[in-house]
Length: 117
Length: 106
Image (tube, rainbow over all chains, first blue to last red; front, side, top):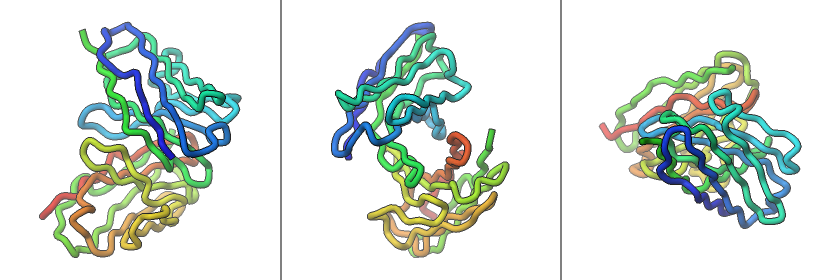
């Protein structure tokens, strides 16, 4: 199993960014996926969830209405569109594989998003 | 929302020590509890799922117990590779992490 995030960087407050996660080593469409973030020096925070068919999606209250999770099963890819970014969204964003049986059992290396003027 | 509270926040221990970390949920989560280990600059690593099930490849010195609202992670004999931060996390109702426990060298 391999998960590789990309798309992080420096963005101004109010700006947008799209994160991508490329998956390999497993049948991507069979698994739910999530994004989890970690602000510098802080703990872990779940951000968003999408099931295998993209028919069920959840968001943390802190990002609801601003972030959109999606996936392309043909491309084995997960995305996070982040709009109206705030300083408090500054964090390393991790792509994770989820199953009810094993929870978040595989993680990417993370991509850093910095929101600053 | 379900809140997860870990104790202690920091733990100083020596190689060979038996270490116990406690996690408390604000409401019952049955056995929907996982433990993760994180080292600086690295992604978290799953250690325990379902409160007491050892993830494949994780050393047997790690064990988890509990159900409902009280859970523990035990390291039976602390090894140099175990100095890290540990997080509990519930997956009963959405997903919530504890604040973390840093295990330091005494």
